[in-house]
Image (cartoon, rainbow, N blue to C red; front, top):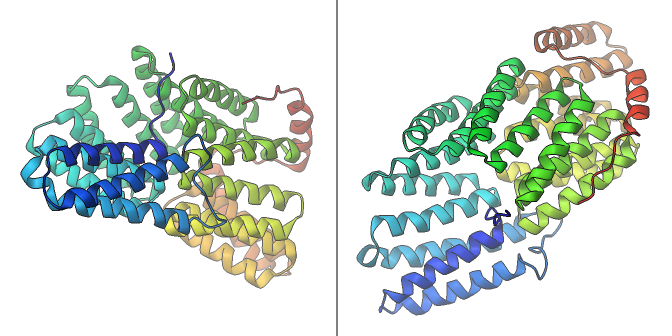
Length: 431
């Protein structure tokens, strides 16, 4: 049975518009006309994001994001001016939850967290433990993206307790998944795999397809990080089919992006490109800007691999514009690493060095050992090639030690050639 996908800009805007319409029924003040005008504008924006075509985007996200954000803030201001006399706490919470979801989908994490906090305060007053747990999970998910992992873990621990007590088992699985994601981002892959397997058992017990697909997707990421590309591909393939079966377009876009990366890792550059294009199309259709940033970054790597440095730079800049606006330090670190690779290949070693150093600084600050290892190794190689062998040795030693700690198998050029030949047998996925 297919489920309606509600994690899109179109769905969020439609819900906000509907909530405003409900508010006007109970209001006889002069603000009613203003609310209806805002509601109509949001409805028009949601139509632009719907079947008539994707929400229009320029090369940079600012125009679209600011336009939508402006009308959402206008809706908030007019809503707040009349809400107290007419709406109970639960109705108010419903409105602020929808606002929060919309801002999260847009990638405006500061606004999303602010409104989730407001919603949490409202539901605390009506003692809705299950909803409190759901809100804490959502807030933790954002903090995790921002690299504030201890804060995220504290929220997830409390959320898991509340959701378990409320019998929301499928959402307990989502909490377990988020905790596992934090573990593998910190480089503890063994712990992460055990946590994902626990989440898989929970999801399987309640037959929740979305969480089953999410676990498969992240198990694929771990296998890819470990250099086990066949196993990674199978996990992504399985997750893609499951996400498509419930019309979860964001999940499907993630899987397509991840399959494209597997092809890049195998050295199958032309086979990976269509997956990024499909992922980007879905991102535009659902208005998901955070995921778009990482697809852009992978497209930059594709162009870098085929020695098209100008195009690689263009896509890297697009990714960086998104990630700076989203305040995503992990993404920025990876973008700086990509810029370092591009300028190194273009022969501008001074600029490359500044990007490598900035990337290593961020990876170290946010405790991302695999990113730090990869960046240290590439920087060491560049130093060695430019006659700075003494400096190169210390960064190579650092990379080797991190790889040993992570138990990561390094893929050589010969390995890539063999993987490319084997990968030709893998069946392509149609969407």
